[in-house]
Length: 308
Image 1 (cartoon, rainbow, N blue to C red):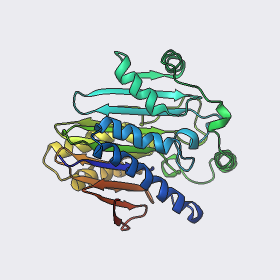
Image 2: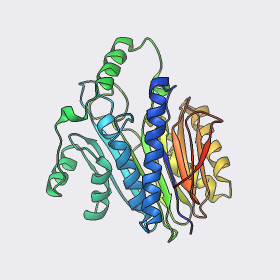
Image 3: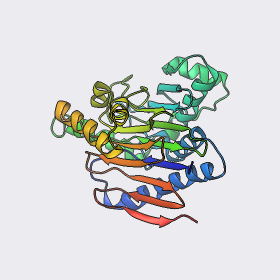
Image 4: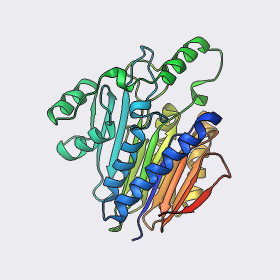
């Protein structure tokens, strides 16, 4: 199989001009990083973890050190990862003081008999696995402090939850052995209640991977995505014979019609086809296949360049 990786930086409201280029470069570097892992013979699971780790370390994205703040001004992060080869999966939620929740999610998948650990249990497991903690302040950016203040000031006056800036990061990949995988990570929604968990760590909503179908990572309004099981719903349409684009349009359209929920998704099929779709204002994305890198942020905007 020719390896493929697709990454996204979250379905979002319009991205400010001064940030756009930084976001574009971040997403391109993450895809390039993941593709290099695949080209070097690495697995799909290694590639999606590598790409998402890169985005967690970039403060421009709502994951890891760029995570938005909850009502108390703290960072609480969610992440999940899944291997399409055997449907093994790992997830964590309400995680604090850890730089890369996606790495912890993979440890849950590989080192426990469980799929999902949360809050204090996840923290104890991280300590047992030797995962280093970082000071909470290290994950708090000045931009997110300002966003929280703005959100509290405007609460109830402006946009509904469904329309807020909805950031997540994610990746899907197919490796040369025909295995698929996904990884998704987020800081959630600005000003969320303490302990709020969205779709990102929930297998079937925030993502799914099955070698017999493909892999998907989603982004958008978490509560809406949870209610329609967006990831599994999209792959169901693929199983029914729909193209990736048709499947994405059907599931995103259903979520919007039923719940006014906006979002986006990235898909790779077992044959190596890929698609990116969103109903939010924009969604930074990049895809690498056959030595070419495709990328974009806004609708009808795609750049294609040869990879070195």
